[in-house]
Each structure stands twice: as structure tokens, then as C-alpha cells.
Image (cartoon, rainbow, N blue to C red; front, side, top):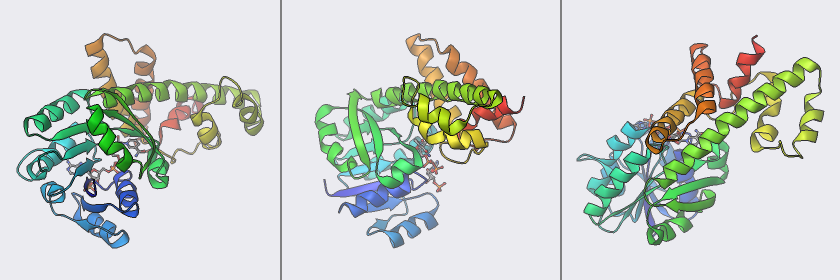
Length: 289
Ligand code: NAP
């Protein structure tokens, strides 16, 4: 497990691939916009390729972190795709937040070619990627996960096999459902507190120590009170992730009433021009009333 490929050098992929290079892996990257791949190869000890196939040739593991299901299909399949370059027994690890259905489909394709697949969406955001502190939720076979886990440790503080192919994505859906509810709860509490004249710092210093405490509370309260929303995961991405969760919920029969309501609020934020604001911008709808 020495040679790796990395496909997709966005906000997340660029630093993740950088951590792999710094950890001593021989990294070959691919990015659709070649300038970013050139920039990466100038900054880190590694090379770049002009197609996903070329970045996958000879690699023991190929990681990808692109946008959505269609983007993964575009980099994985076809004559220039990852599978076309991947050697037998090599592993494709997809860090994109995508559907469980896609994970199962890619797993089938991999197995039919004597290759392996792990779906591995991450949480921890841009800061987690830059600091090498991501959490990774994986789906796939135990013995393949055991090979991949020490390599992912270059950019992850924790990774866990959740079950067979698709279960990494399902865990990520549960993660996003939690975030939607937590952030709406914080928005309502902070807006209520502000209107009642409470001091934000004193309030959070106190209630964050009790049962209401959360990562979102401690890391986002200052900017939420200040009405600043440029500090993390964008509303557009969140709506993509929630749409994936709604589709899965329809299959497993679960109700997501609160998540549906919050998704409607995110839609309003998009209509207000806040597509690139972070998810804590839910409070903006309450502040405007
Ligand atoms: P991003 O900054 O927009 O980067 C997306 C990357 O994917 C870029 O390298 C882009 O290439 C590439 N790409 C997109 N569509 C492609 C296609 N059809 N063919 C080839 N390459 C394509 O996104 P990101 O923030 O890194 O997020 C990546 C994934 O991680 C998403 O699934 C997101 O939901 C998930 N995620 C993000 C965060 C976060 O805080 N940002 C947190 C957790 C999970 P170009 O440079 O050519 O556009």
C-alpha cells in the first residue's frame, strides 16, 4: 500500500491528497481542471495525470472526492475512468458524499473485475481536511477496510467500517439528519436569547457544559450571533446530501418530518441568495422577521 491515486482536488481533496504525500505515499493526482493538479504537484511531493485512468495505473489504492453521484460516475467509469486503470486487487475508495445505491453499484463493478470498493464519506469539513482530522464512515469488506484504514490515517483521526457497501453513505446520511436538526435548534435558541437580551458568550459558556452542548454550538455560536455565514459547509451541498437521505428514507420506510422542514428552510435561503452560505445560516430566516 505505497502507491496511491487521488481524484478530485477540491476544498476537501486537495489537502487530503497533500496529507498522503506528506505521510510518504507515492501520490498521483487527477483534477478535471488541470491547473489545480499542477498547483498541487508544485506544492507537494507527487505527480499529476491527465485522466483518472492514468492516475489509477499501478496504484494500490485510488481515492476520489468529487461532487455527487454523476460526478463519481464520470471519474470512475468509461475508457478514461478509474476502473479502466485500476489493476486487479487494487482498491477504489470513494470519499464523495453520494447515494448508497451508487456505492452498491460500484462495489458490484469492482468485484466483477477482481478489484475492491469502499464507500467512505467524511465529516469534519474543510478544517478537518486541512488539519488531517476527518472522521470517515466506511462501507465494504472488513479485510479491505483493514488495508485502507492505516492509509486514511494520513488525513483522518477516526475511521469505522459501518457494514457492507453503501453503509458508509447511510451513516453519513444519519450524520446530516443530525446536523439539520441541531442547527435549527441552535438557530431558534440563539435568536430567542438575543431578543430576550441574554449575553451570547455567557449563555454558551454555561449551557454548552450541560446536555445542550454540541460541536455546532461551540464552533458556530459567535458567527451565528454576528450573522456571518462563511465558515463551513455550504447550503447547496447540504441540500444535495438531504436529497440523498430523503431517497434512502423512502426505501427504508423512515419518516424525516423535521429534516424535511429544515430542508424547506435551506431552500428559502437559496432563494434569498445564500447558496454558498454555510449551514448555520438557518438563523438568518429568524433574524429577518
Ligand atoms: P469542491 O471544492 O466543489 O470540489 C469538487 C471537486 O470535484 C473538484 O476537484 C472538481 O473539479 C471535482 N469534480 C466535480 N465534478 C466533477 C466531474 N464531473 N468530473 C471530474 N471532476 C469533478 O467540493 P468539496 O467541498 O471538496 O466536496 C467534495 C465532496 O465532499 C462532496 O461530495 C461534498 O458533499 C463532500 N464533503 C464536503 C465537505 C466540505 O465541508 N466542503 C465536508 C464533508 C463532505 P474542478 O476543480 O475541475 O471543478
